[in-house]
View 1 (cartoon, rainbow, N blue to C red):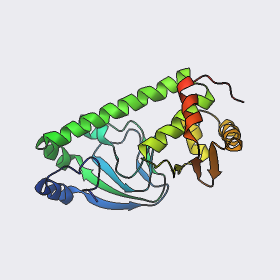
View 2 (view 1 turned 90 degrees about the horizontal axis):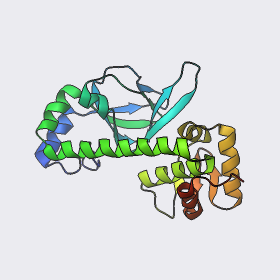
View 3 (view 1 turned 120 degrees about the vertical axis):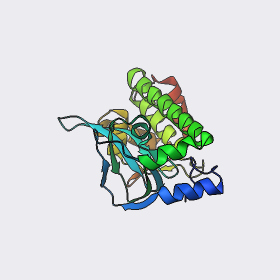
View 4 (view 1 turned 90 degrees about the vertical axis):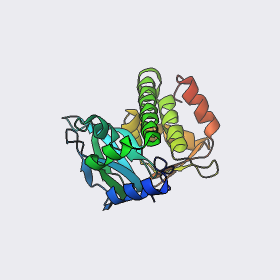
Length: 225
């Protein structure tokens, strides 16, 4: 499984064997708390199957989803690298299989693997760019542009084929990603479904025609019809 993982796939056999000795295979049920904001950053996590939700919440109960981490991705690397506490909550969004690697093992290992260190630098840069894009969308884009950007981004990150653009996400989850009410999300998705751009399924959204969504994402200010 680690050999197929995007971050670790280029390690030589000896290094991969060493990493495997550190990695603890864990199965999580949907809804299980992996860590909470403010917890010590003691472990790095690699997703094998399922989806992990990275989110924050306010004292009045509002939630915002910062990221949905799927197979082939890692999470928890910021606290592992800088030694600070967790900056968000991590929850099993579905039943998950993950590998857990202790910080005390991982940091010395990474120091012996310059190529792996560069992969994590690239990963953090990618995450920073994604965060910048999300802030830009919230500030500058209207609801259609924001929602279109979110759907296209999820499809691209999951490397979905054009013929099967099924995104496993609920309307509540995507509303927490784009910062709009579920009712507004539902109204917009139904309008797009009537035009044949998307299809709504239980717990999923299928992108049928990405071209008009991409136009909305790029324009960012098209009126909601």
